[in-house]
Length: 236
Image (tube, rainbow, N blue to C red; front, side, top):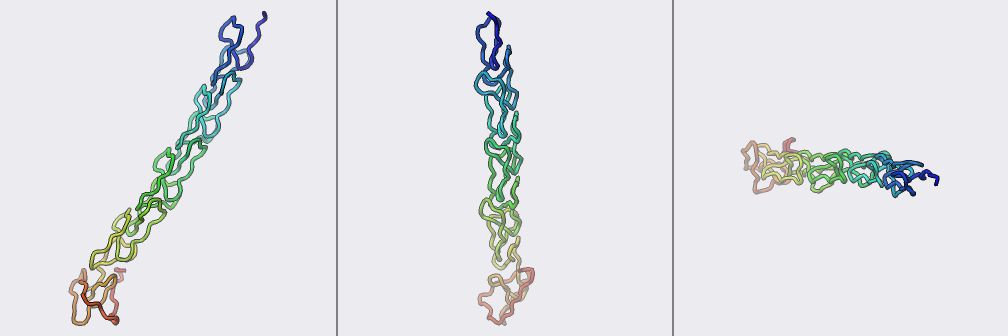
């Protein structure tokens, strides 16, 4: 009996055989081959009796002799086809499964390290006004915010202050002191001979005095409407 060559995708593994053996998944061969060849990394061969390997798409990868391609996991991406591995998303970006590119973190969020699968909202007391942030910025002294995921900070109101960065609320000025809007500290506010009512300084009424120089004592009687407002510019 005359011997014939095995058809593509099949091999003879030894002499004297009456049938050819199909290449297993992840392998391929041409006509008359005696061995099957492994698909290289970035390629695959599903099923059996393969005559060629197929290319892995973007967002997927494979090792050698693969029967299928694997999706890039969340936090990684595959920008080109026929990839043997996936790359980490850089800080400030993220990805879901099978991504061919990474997505920038939105304003108010951040991704602090490489390989993030999601962005985190900025903590209260911090903000992010730009996209692709690897961290959030603390609210400066004199400002605050109360919610997560913020893109801005609010000024402390008059009569309040925030002495340092990252405040989530402002602190009321102590009795006898006041502050401007957006202040990081309170000021004694009044000169000697005047006193503080709310946020305003007034001359002491006739017959009354205030001898202090660094703070003013609040008088029990409010001044009449014709009393002249007398406040130091630095207090407002």
